[in-house]
Image (cartoon, rainbow, N blue to C red):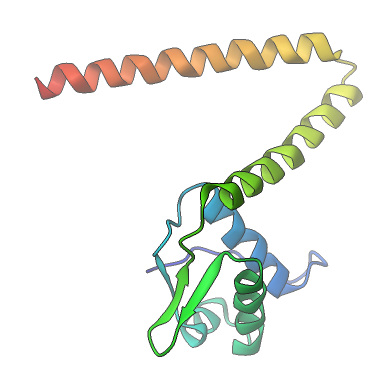
Length: 142
């Protein structure tokens, strides 16, 4: 499997933590599914042009967090985790984004009621678009 991770050497965040954060996001977003195999440590290290020990440390952190499991001699896989962990990670990610949105709204002097109404309006539009796409798929499949 090709794991798309972008490393930024000059942002002050340790590289292993950048890997941890990105893998957590990929799992929470459903781009990595339970049972998916991650690249071997050496392969990912070569792709990212980093020391294999850095990848090993990131994988260990993710294993301790219950997101990855190692199968002796068979590789590293996304854990068959229950929904609570995945849900918890999704909420954590969305909380960070909500904090950033609230901070930006405050800087732009947009009050909370206006912001909430904007989110509701956008959600309604997205839901209508999804429904429309589903209807078109059903019509096409018939």
